[in-house]
Image (cartoon, rainbow, N blue to C red):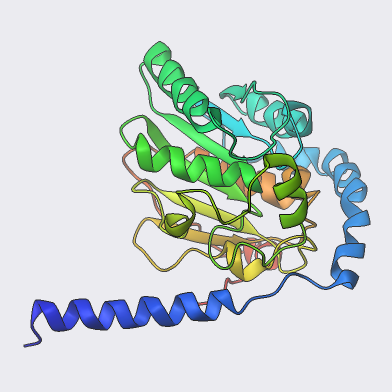
Length: 271
């Protein structure tokens, strides 16, 4: 049998190879970025898809906290939050104005908000993050696993080089520091110790879709949808997937299934 030291060495080699592959990623092309104009179409499709979305699984009333993307605020997540409120959840915005990056005090305020919601409801909180907001959701779950029920990210680049996207310059301008300078940067690829779902799109024009892929683990998964980066939080398929994930029993998480009609809406993710 192989020794523990040998197994640890092999695991380190495999992780190193994965890191090297991810660091070689580049940002989506300018052509892909130009396709982000379709985001308003996805908002229009949301209204058309409401009869279908109303068939999505309903909730059990537990609290859900939604984090916006870079230089966006709670207004950007209003449609998502309204949909989830209609499915039976106690939904909250992050209430910190525009998301200007990991400035001093931001993560601390997010941690306090999660603890407040968990203490008030006496239940665990589900966290949803759009783009940069997903980084906050994942990191908060790592710090407060006893308060977090699950994490769902939308177009969040947690895995790979910090500049494999078309938004890193904007981030550095808004946050006032280099995109990979935060102390948490080296650990962002590690999944939280709670059920974690990454919803992503290969046609994302802002972030490299490969950087949104969770490494294999029993309680993590990746769900592919056809969406733009700026529209994924209003995309009907993404909203259905979110409702499906939130509706699971707290102690009975199972990976997303693609049998039947779902196979036509949700492509099989890469392995």
